[in-house]
View 1 (cartoon, rainbow, N blue to C red):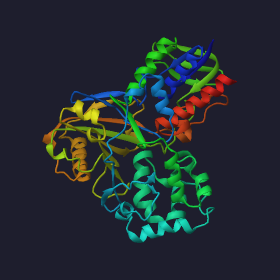
View 2 (cartoon, rainbow, N blue to C red):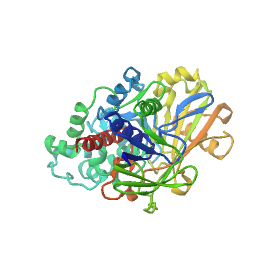
View 3 (cartoon, helix red, strand yellow):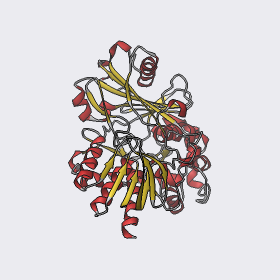
View 4 (cartoon, rainbow, N blue to C red):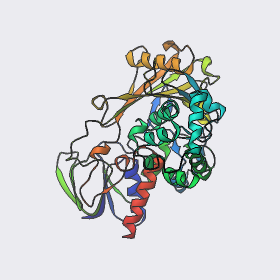
Length: 438
């Protein structure tokens, strides 16, 4: 018998266990693999320590920054390089991402940088948003429908779709605006137009960049959370797989194959109910990291990277991050080499339940594909001979359709709050406060 069992040792599970234990709750944390942190882990490519997946967090709230300060990393918070990212449209055109926007929704539709992407006619159509009654589109079921009705199909296709695809790995027509852009509907009603709503939300957001990072990598948050688990006496059990999750008990199988029933006052789970089938529409994600020694990249030809329309011709990557431009601390660590991170959509069958970094030969199919895409997106004739290290990581996206848990089990993590550290931290800490207050 224990006070609480946390199922899953990803970021949300670590945070939940840490906050509960700090409040005096006895916690058992079970993790099926041998690693803690989930997707927030590190790998080494060409001798450079890198985040294995996410390298930044959204600053739409101060949730992650507040946690970083609590963990002693407040002085390590860093903003990305201000040169910003570019976009690639469906027809393969590239242009700088407009300066005033939210998920690609322009705050100033007639701005020159918006016109450069969508054209003057589409920008005029988007400007008509200011003449529409505020209820138009306000109850749209998806972000795509909201943008389409307020600003037209071209803005949705050329601006919003590549940004959303790069950030959320899905189409705007499949996203709830209240989940990915909290407060946008209410701001639309107050401001009378979608563009003004975007500007209002940007003004209320944390000053500075829309994202931040941590010097040395986001993984440093996990390092500190794991250290706190030891400090506060959390019983961490690795290689321990949950087979049944109930309101007051978790059935597990330990590393020796023995079954055990953990009874608790509270059960929190970061993974879908193991008894429910995995959704057949679950997405797969692949991240290919290249370390390149090529002076042609020194000029940062596409700023911090490129977000790609899902149907863009000529490339298969959905985004590329020029990480050594984005993060000056990483440029120092790389010693003149360049770190490029390309993300791809894969099928669920090609993804992995437990993500592992695997080395890549630049001359094999994966390496050639990544180098070819990087050259096309950055506008530089890269050669595989210039690649001094490469690795690939594959994992599943959150199984939101199969995330239902038994009644009374507290859901945390991506399956409950969607992608992104900001959402995970905010949702997890809110649920922990509710538990502690009950």
